[in-house]
Length: 113
Image (cartoon, rainbow, N blue to C red; front, side, top):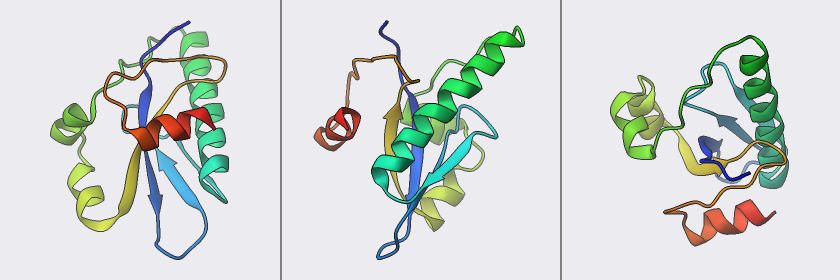
């Protein structure tokens, strides 16, 4: 199945190990890992569980937004943009694939991990 990924913001501190990840489209969904690969794995698992929970509760998951839409509509965007170092990473639920339309080379490399 091909789907549009949800964007996660992977926050980090230069020179320190570990990342945390937040999904602006899914309030309350956040995760962390000791390194980039583990954070991506945890983000995929968290996204899968979150979407499964919404569907089992009879709720329709929100449609994933583009980074431009998030920047215009997410209340926390300015705080993140001004106060945190982060990368934007597309994340699909486990056992799903997606074809990113505008993925950067780094994003494609991360998806392959």
